[in-house]
Length: 261
Ligand SMILES: [Zn+2]
Ligand SMILES: [Zn+2]
Image (spheres, protein in one colour):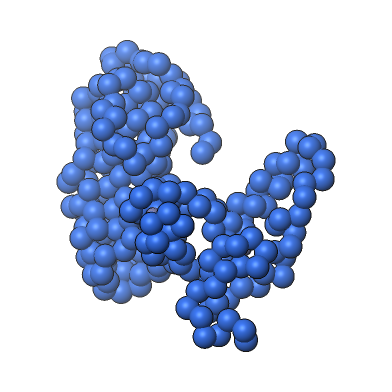
């Protein structure tokens, strides 16, 4: 192939870098991606947005934060501003793994995985195995694991799954968090903490709002509306769903839907 010798190549359609070694069935559809929009009917528009998200995404340079759009199939790219290499790969960890991960892709730590890297930065993560170091997700961290989480955990959104039972040793910093299983630990949320029915949370919470569905449990100190916003890497703007809620009445609070994210 014409790209075979190159380490990464530039897409002819849109000028993005991509690795020629990645499987790319999507390339056949590439022309559609950049096709001029037909009409501004909102359904079509929404469909196109969705379509685009499947094919490409906006990522930020780890060094200089310059944003760029990359093809969904790319495994790495180069920052156009500072020339730093940016990993875009997804990692699936099924055994011991100790290297540092810094990717704009996703991480899947399977039940048999043992991730001892001191630091992991990724887009979204699914944690089903042992996590020993720190984890930051630009997007969502889904936790389906029972045991101790000794490192720091931060993410725009965290989901603690129904069967999870975690004990977080260090502060958990989130935009929003949904607790469907059991969790103990301190949470600093920029906006919302939601404890679903059958969920339980033990630990202090700082958030703009908290909801505890009927059947859910929360015990700990609650500070409303003073989320310490020193956390630059979390998304800054999300409207709080509820301004505040009296501390006393939490467990009887009516269930409230968490805004879909
Ligand atoms: Zn492209
Ligand atoms: Zn850069």
